[in-house]
Image 1: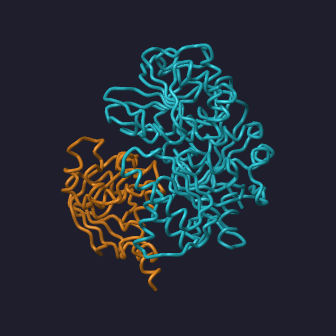
Image 2: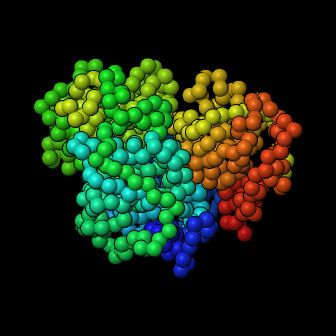
Image 3: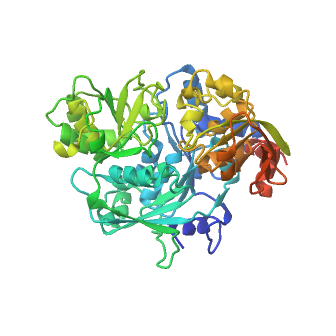
Length: 415
Length: 164
């Protein structure tokens, strides 16, 4: 069996499963973010009073945080009250950061886990070998109460990565390349597993970018098989329980294999207004930008901030550019304060916001008509960051930093 | 859900993402009516009003891609749309639509043939769409999905299962 098949078999109490089969699975964790109050409302309307297992519930207030309006405040209050009333221990308030990063840092995600949540980018949990996938808020309520949900066992695609990245080419560029090649529905409903000699050398941070961006080709879930790097990341974080490193069997059936020659990859940019609209950097160099955003669950991890800081050290960004820095989590922000990385970014001309989803989800950093933002996030959809007459381009932190200096989209290899 | 759904079709292209269906800034609402006021508004200020005069959406590939926001389905229901037919759906939208009681039908052959304002008839029980005197077959809903759609969605199902 593949990783997804093994996880779905275990969580549905079956010896084995095969693609297309529908199972009743019991997730190890159900995550809800700012949407939590909506799930609470559904629970109230249903008249339910009992949860299946409060310890399988995690709540992180990350989108629109701190509250911007009285309505936000009341909605957050409803989520907090629910967490208190039902004794939800895995509750993280507006100071914590983006749910995905917070839960992995806190040791709530282990290889082999099944995690569902109110966010499409739950696929990111596959960076630690867990099956993460997005569901709606009503379904979250249903899992809170019943402990289970129906799931279809997906086909699994094997992505073989050959060679190694050239300098200034990152996991983000790989994923934009793949999304451009396969399309926004290139892997719809499928599971994806990444293999290749270089994968064992990839940091968990880069693996997070890969499994996060995999969502943009429609996957149900994505995995980097757990290894020594996974163990290293989890050491000191995941202390409360043992876990098994679930990997695919040697005779696991993959629906197809896609090979990528990493050495040939160049920095990539996703152009407005779809992530699949990708171009190699050379085709968009010189495009005027008004704002750059270093944030989101795709690329606002500590390593991402370091990549940007290395390029921006001792330099100033272009006077026509606004630079918004939104660290992915409190842990990341603290590390970047201690190492001086944040000072470097702020001295270059950046402005710091609190950890969370921020501008990626249209919370602050809104664009006016005709403005262009170059962002390290994972979506560039029409109107996502404000005006529907604005444009969003997506890139790696290195490309973002190089472009901030010149005021136009620039090739990080030239700096 | 009605057994036979009839009405005027509005045609969309490929990759209609959930940010287009309902922008993130309106996710503070969950009410169908409120969401419908802003549904598809990034395509033009007059679009939400215009879409209210249609009954069935026919879209290309990957309808509902992007965010897992359940309100994408709720907003379409709020517009008074009775069904969405697409060549394919993104998985989160597919789940959310069924859980919200919005019938969604995969029928790749219809998209090219359909024209805006065409009258369409969907026979849910038979798994057949009638459009411009031609018939298009689609896979019938499994019983579990049909039950959810008939109840009007998962919230109603939960209410019933809690009270019994």
